[in-house]
Image (cartoon, rainbow over all chains, first blue to last red; front, side, top):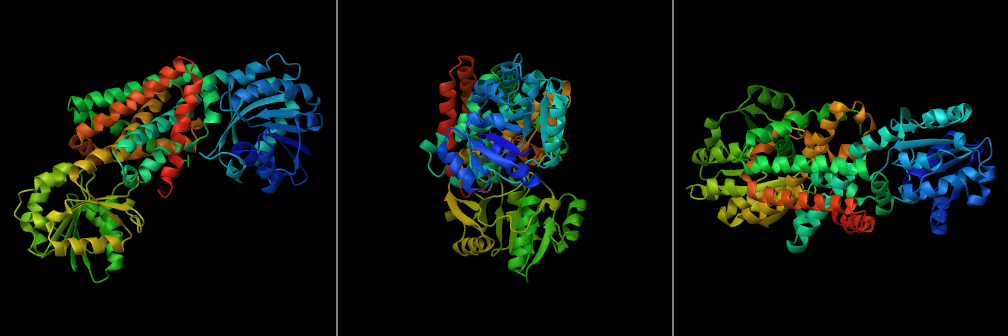
Length: 283
Length: 283
């Protein structure tokens, strides 16, 4: 793995570069981005060693695509067109069905490994890149059987070395489950932020009363719309299903309050309290 | 402030004891609780110096009540009955209207200061008590004018010394605003946890895919139902109003998705993104 190309050098792409570089000092990290300012920032932060373009990919041992998922769907076939027979392409997108479908019949399909490293923060861009972001985190790998065995092996070693544990899943199961544990959380957080901001317009100083609990619950509302709009678009059916269930649960809670059934309100909370145990180990 | 009585020695009461003791080494902290095991734990953790009962309160320079808000409403008049003319009683409840109303005509009303220190974690009980929990946090003080000037002054010094900044508000405004920035966050978190747990019953291993974003959004679902049920009961009207607005915003988001209006979805998120700036300073 000498020549590594990172298409997208933000939070996820940039963090992957930092850890891979650390484990593989001989590697040369080439950055590719639509925006030159982003590449300059990534150079300045030592996330990448060189700037590059898509035309250089014939030279790549590994290409890591970490850009919005709509751009991945468009760009991935072109990247595979350009890759050599021994080159590996991976993506880090939060959806997997559309991305896998975009290359299902591509002659170089076996040079591609579909992944979703489940790690991140609410920040974005090269300045958000962090060393060690992936330690102890899960990397969901989809359709592993469609990738050349040798390239599978290379990728799994690379991502194990930066601390990730692999989980194998088909793209449909990935998109269905991740809607619950990630996509829904983002919407609940954005809409909580919206509800409170709308109130603030009329009632001053409300945020002066906000504590760490509010900050935690609304943290994901700082996330990048550019990343998240295409995720919701690609995973529309699953996300709408989770939203329906969430809205039903909230409406039921409201109805219990309206009916003064506070024993039932108490049970609702007690039954959810064991999320303590479930969350152990997720930091 | 020699003899301090803490009624309730959990997360909030216990943390207040730790910081007050640190600033006032001469103080003797007496703990009062329904449960002897809780007092023993508080003694063991050096949160309190002695166990006590309600019958000892005549001796108190300061009484801090940090128990569920329904118990506060019931107990507060009795505590005021027992306090000396120079004794001060404060409470730390998350609702203020019912608590202030419970003693509005009490002959010792001027010995009481209604407060809400906005600090905490999702944990509870004496083992959850933390030194320095209140540094930089807001203490909402209600109806300050109804408290004897000398006792106001004492209380404000005590709570400034542990790092809090005071904000003055009437109980109605407190309960209305706190419903948005605290009570609603708890419900959104509990119901998010419920939605995902219900899914997990049918689909195994879903939590294996949960990352730090989910953990943050669902953190408050670990909170104590014993504390929160009476808060929702006392602040029912305001909480229902916030829930309605939240459900409307979520429903609108779902409708935009159903209509494939992803430009509007993007705007929804962009408009909420500036919560970044709003949250600066809240940790």
